[in-house]
Length: 152
Length: 108
Image 1: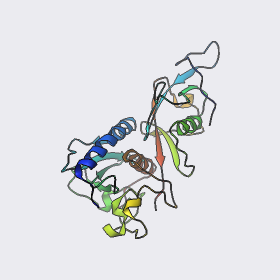
Image 2: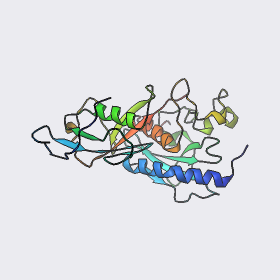
Image 3: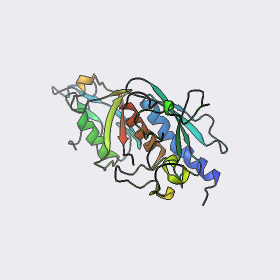
Image 4: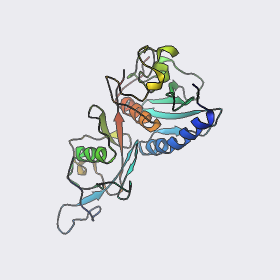
């Protein structure tokens, strides 16, 4: 099943109000200026405990039926997915190993063959459900703010 | 959860001789908690300055139904993580201060 892009963009725009408010209050960088039906991306910049900035790209294709894909990129957004772009707190694949990240699923090259994409909002043994874009950003914020240094 | 907050009073308001109170705001992933949002909130974020950060965490969880006890809940003032055992006064929180509740789930 695929989600019509018009459905995804409407859902993402609706949820981005909470994301933007959260990011502003938490002093996170937030950029959804290029969001469109053909560019379902937004960016959030987090800071680690030791002040290093990390830019997360959130790709919302087929959201909310499927989870977004979270990837860390460099500031100009030209390099992506290398360990030096990741905070030290995530899976060394490198990957944000959570149900809310498509990259964590084995079908997409991730470590988890035991998860189904359509179940992405369910809790895991290691944590409760995370059901919205703002909750995803908050989870990332909490983990990165408590971590120090780069993965590689 | 702490008891329902008192009404009236702002920064430095002694409420008729009592302890000064502050009215704060807390942004969460599910919305803003303030003196008038959300409309149906059973508590409002007004506290004596000796209230602990943990009291605020407990109350905002209650307002927004963050029921999962295995999540990690943290309050931030900008980029600064607040110690749940410290008081509002110790973090120099004043009326109008905007705090952020981060909610951490789990990894795989």
